Length: 347
Image 1 (cartoon, rainbow, N blue to C red):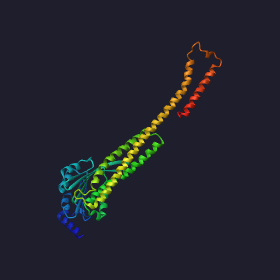
Image 2: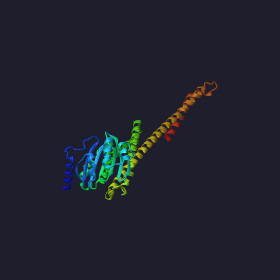
Image 3: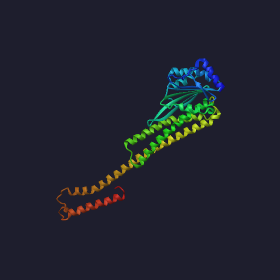
Image 4: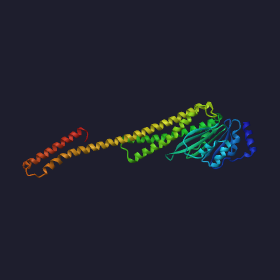
């Protein structure tokens, strides 16, 4: 505690002893320095470089859609690579992990539910010795809960930037699960509907939209599997071997999310195929019924057509009971055909 007080005193003497949050500027969500797992104070961006160079200190900065001026200021404080800064300024990056010297640049796609819709965001992470900088783009969940959870466990936070990185990735992956659960409920409803009745046009459109959402979610999750898998090894800059099991747990969660997405996509594909097959079966049944009734009606039509030719030499025309005989023949043939088609289950 005395060491923490000394650090705060040094900072106050340097002109940083403000009572209001020093990071109140557009694009900066939070900026704080930690030592031995304890939060020392909030800091300004231009002071981050000095604080991260102190022993056992880690600077954690959170940005949301920062402008180029702010990004270049962060670059100057932590000596970040220009290519990484260029990527961080432009959203819609593919999830990836890139190594620049002793620093890492990670891109992850986020997803959460908002007004019964899946909204996607993007997080860029700069991780190096003594600092973590998160840059959020789009409608992404705030990492305030992650910061609070880390601060509540000083012993774990004492592992520094590696534990902060794990916590952020774990939070991103955990947020996939509510999305999967909502989609799974909709898929189950569609699956039950397919078994009960033929899908309407609106149901087919809903099925297609679900498949498209799952495809977007899969595109966000699958590359993250490879990113997280690399953290299971200790060949990354500054990687703490004691945290391997934590990153392995994140990898397992990502893989499970991927498996759930693939399973749901298969269910939707089977539901669509089942709907098509049910529709084809119903069309075939209708065609059989129409063909059966057409065959039955063809009998009186043919006989009536024969006796409607009005030839003079047609002996049946002068037969006293000819009408009743022909009528009986028509009825007998029609009933015979009707029974035949009923046995064949066409009627």
